[in-house]
Image 1: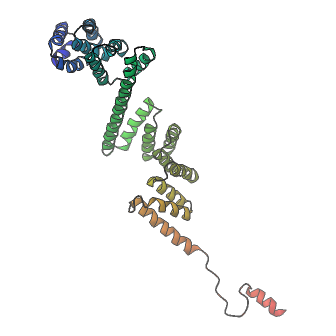
Image 2 (image 1 turned 90 degrees about the vertical axis):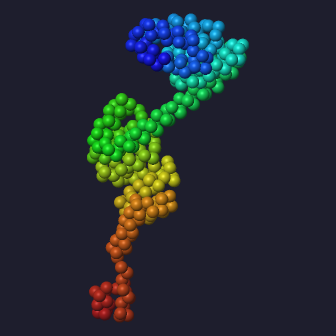
Length: 332
């Protein structure tokens, strides 16, 4: 059947007839798999050639064959193909209703969910109205699962590629992706990080501000603070880190970033306070250990530069009197 489908897609009319003949003679348990294979045909001419024959078979008395043909039409055009399934969901045959639900749950197209939602608003048959919300929920769940899986795969491939692709090449790819979709906060964070890595702190700040405006996140705020630190704006950087801490009070990165900014500003007590919050999350993290060492040196330098107390005088004069004052007292 795969070979026949390939020939049909190449425009062979004889292969189309053979494909339909196979669909008529296949065992019932093979029909769902065969329908999925035929639904892969996307070219307009083969679809136009097969569509009238499939539409005729979708009205067949053989429920197995009818719904297999209808499922192919549904995959090609959910708007038109769904009407046959509405009738099947309201059928008196339990087998026809169950088979319709099976085909609908296998179809993962987001367009089908919208079609079902519109059909629900107009549907008057009680059983169909009861089943449509359940089928819609399954469709939404399948769509979300697919999106999450694709996002995970994309992130996984990106992280593996990051080790081998140069920052300049990564920036070119991310700049192109940003041009195509400038409303994605995740793209903005990734682009801001690579701009910062390639020395464009001002460009990083611009795109990270867009990311924060779209959806504030720990990664965006910390990267924004780093960009502002690079640009010589310590107060603005500190505000970005403070927002990150407020957004995620248990974030190790947020507290360490804020502690580093406070240390650079000379606020040793504030730096020590945030470092104390961060260290229990990762007790021996290199970044917190390095920050603790810098803080210790800053404390030592601060104490060494502090003025020492005036020693007690050996004579009986009050310690607050200078030599000139003592001489003037003696003349009196």
